[in-house]
Image 1 (spheres, rainbow, N blue to C red):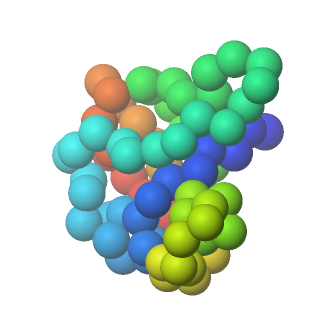
Image 2: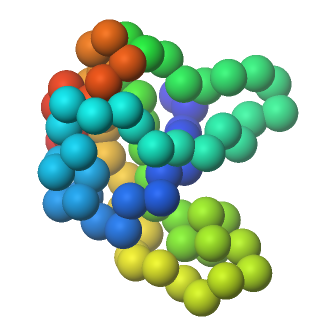
Length: 75
């Protein structure tokens, strides 16, 4: 399983972006984890996403189904 870090402050905010491109930060040293089609596991990790800045939101994890490079479903 791979984990992609996102900048969404909540799962609700992520759900509001269904139909849009995923805003994420690639963190793997071993190549891209992002897939334009399929299921991704994403997280909001304020300590990683906002390094050196004030914490922004709470930590959460979600499964995101992508279709054609757009967010299709968030669970």
